[in-house]
Image 1 (cartoon, rainbow, N blue to C red):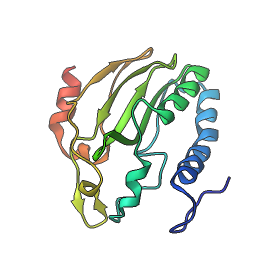
Image 2: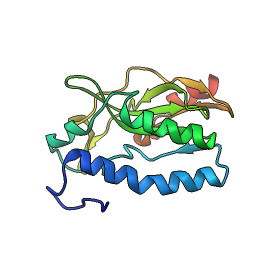
Image 3: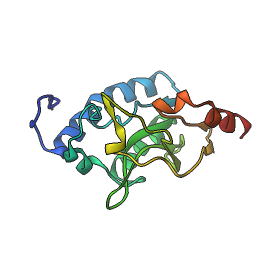
Length: 167
């Protein structure tokens, strides 16, 4: 399957599937090499759509846990690899988050982190797509280590890192 790259090419499900298919060989290679904790990039199963403000991307949001996290849990279990799986989350109609699911090495869904700091400036119109996170800064005990998650712009704000460190 080729990756739809031009505007209007492919349905939302085709785009998401193509993005996942591009990642599977990399996930499998990491697993074969014995990686213990693998973190995928922000909203890994779609292109980064925030340079614009096209509401069509709302349709790419899904439940967490949901189809993508369940699929990634199979790889986590297969390779005994903790996975951080960032996707566009739909909590309910119109309530959308930039979320990272944490999956343990046995495939168990441990929980999620929602990006707290949402930029809104040229090229990063994220407030058009995401609400600020409401789960604080959870820490997850995995098979290999305690894991806390930050997503992209959160790194500009040290308080969350401090909270993660204290936990």
